[in-house]
Amino acid sequence: MQNLVLQSKKHIEFLAVNAPEIRTNLESVAESMQTLADMLENQIVFNRDTRIKFAKENACKNQAYDFIAAEKLVGRFKTFCECYRQTCISV
Image (cartoon, rainbow, N blue to C red; front, side, top):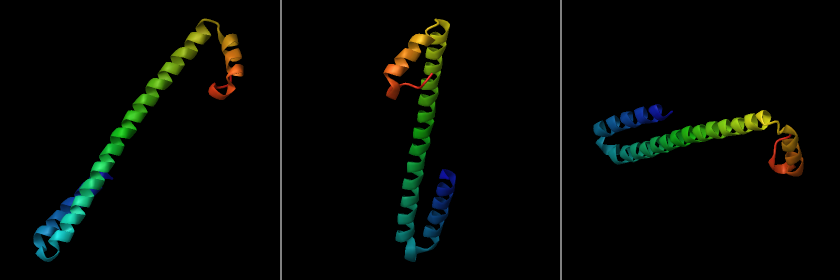
């Protein structure tokens, strides 16, 4: 999507050079296209960062569950979940 927006911006800039009577309007459209491309870039970075954070959180939870199982604490964890049902997944 971002590449499409940037390619369209290039086409608009080309048209602006060859159409002096509407150059100002086309330049304005090209600026808007650049703003859109920048916003898409920010969204790409945000999504990548969110996926990385989710993967780390998931790995930490799996490590905690492995510890609970290895230390034979499943019964105590179940009691914990019963006491804090809204904040804990059910076992």
